[in-house]
Length: 238
Image 1 (cartoon, rainbow, N blue to C red):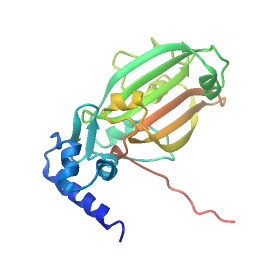
Image 2 (image 1 turned 30 degrees about the vertical axis):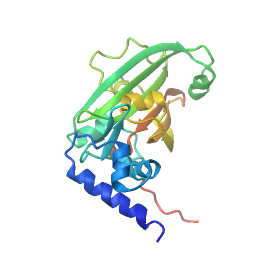
Image 3 (image 1 turned 60 degrees about the horizontal axis):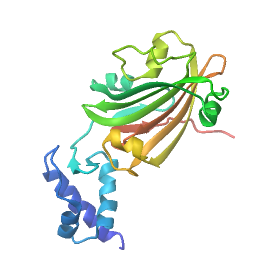
């Protein structure tokens, strides 16, 4: 019974969001909290559910906006494929923004992730993937310069380092990913147009070639409302 007032608050928010046209800003948090008779902290907790679903989005210094129904990209985790491949399957328009490609020398962390020595020349590719022009994911790939140098990517880069490597004939065989929920750091929240500490899905992955060398270390942040990941597993037999 103790959860009933909170459930009622979420129901009230759901009705308010449903009545607000997509793209329109909700009233300010202080006004909304007063209107609903709750504290701002309780209001933010209730709103986080709708943010996770991708129905609303908070923009730093601007307010909270109704997104409306968003296309959900559905994918199994048994097979590695790019967001672009998932999008093509759904006839969904995907674009790239905030693209930054830079060379740098490996520090201790990146050297360990790629299995190289410190100061090895590396290339970092950072970008935002947009679905129907809305930020959906923030991707960071780090590769040895011997695999990908900053000047290798085409001017019309689609956003997928994986697809680019495959198109070039790289022999890639498997990937290992650690999946977690995380709070958005400031440098990720800003390009995704969300608030710092908002919840994101995080994939930290290593991509291996036929010689079991790591050719790509990537960190991908997904806004949950845009993605539905699932795993098909066989029942184990003792």
